Image 1: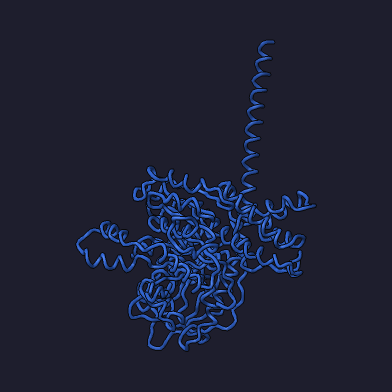
Image 2: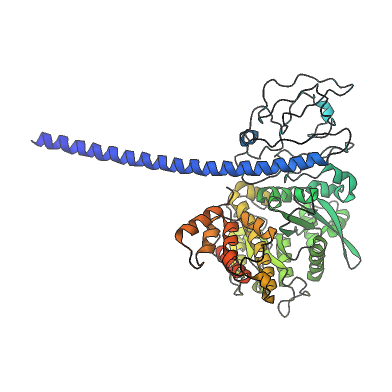
Length: 574
């Protein structure tokens, strides 16, 4: 009898163990199914983005009108399967070329070898070398080596290739790959593919000298000269490719102004370009300006102290920093030049201190400045700021602030100064003076490395900037709606395209948050709004409520979200 009890006990134990293993397996399968569903949604979004990329490519090809450059008739839109294959890395390089595109053998040019057999990895047919349908300038596209050194039959890597083998393509519609496409001296028709991915059209490079300056080419933008009290100040403006191609039709969403805090060098320019690439600010329709507030001083100090180290030159530059009034004038001139009503101000190290002082200028007794930027700064992004923090200025900054600082930063010394900066920024009491702090574990003083090591920090920086620009647009709508005009009644006024576009780049969960207090909404409607995102929820809200009420509600949702550490900041496009 005892033996039977022992056997029964053993069988019960095995049954319990088997049941536990089965439950664990079911949970794992459920998680896998959820992951597959999320992957399916991401792939659908990727296909939509690649369709947008294809339309942009068609526009580029239509604008190429030189007799010896690529001539293409109407190009058929590729199928989603073909586009999906185009974004998949392969051992052989893919091409963004439709089946109709053929390359003839130019007179006097002998191909080094036949084109690879079989279909290309992009899902399109290989290019024939003997069709007269299209002629291509032999140097239209080029890597750092000259095209003449590359056999015509050799495939080139598509500009669609993503930094990490397309694992994180996401919603980006950038044109550049990780490889740095560059100028070649003496080859005027070589295309520029900046690291941030937004191509500068060749016709602009040839027609406008502002794109030819060396630093402008390195930024992948153009140079503008600002007149500040009859003194020229250089500024480099990097704009989305769509705005360069079709400025009249493109929907610009805002402006970010970056203060380096020292004169620009090749290293600092490359760092900022990588920041643009990681944050995808340009993909969101945002232009970015880099004024050279310290460049003249840097050039002078470098000439006078040619034997000194770079650190000593930086110290000399800091001693001759521009005044707050000069910074205000430069920032106001950039706003006027770009036609922007407001901007987000971003500063690194010494530039972060300058950004705080400019934001607080004229807002309290004893602070320097004229207050030229009052009401025009939508937000501040402080990157590894120099210490000590200007406490009085920090206390009166009225806009949202993001503090981004790597824990292993030894230049700005995170361990000694981060807490004091966080306290200064976080202790403000004005309405709307919200703050968020990000301290990635590694990256040092190199912001590009910080964002490369921590992709969530790059996404958070984008979401913060977009939130600030949204709040600025909503403030403008609220002020305009105070006229009492019937045009501002529920459902009467279409929302600005820039507002809708920015909302599309925000986490989808904010849509549900917006609809929580909407009168008569059911739980099911909230879930639907969450699935569709903030833009859809905003449109539905405006159909039943006045613009002023909606603007106030959305701004409150965004500010609360920032104050609550931007929880659930998964991109709507991921």
